[in-house]
Amino acid sequence: MSFEIRVVSNTPLIGDNDLERVTKTFLYQIGYLSKGADPEIPFKIFFDFFLKHPTKAWMVEEIASQLKVSKP
Image (tube, rainbow, N blue to C red; front, side, top):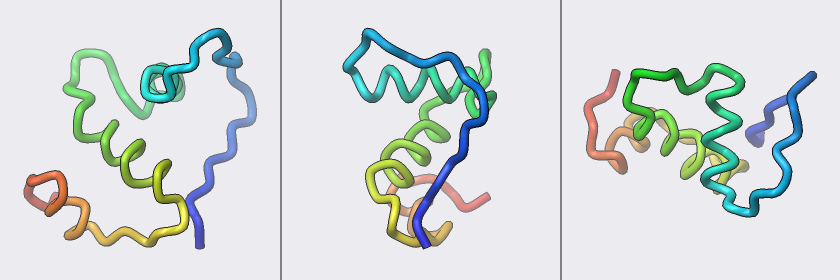
């Protein structure tokens, strides 16, 4: 099973070729990241794990280990 996200309605992000910046903007737009909270860990999970490796099945322990954080 691969990672998929279906966006029904969102303003297209055009004019920027920086994939990380566009992804971060998109994640704020859909509410995955929120203002006032540190976006580093949730952004890395989405970008470094799900977007870069969409066909890999990630275990929570594996993500936590690679990010050097404790399991929720």
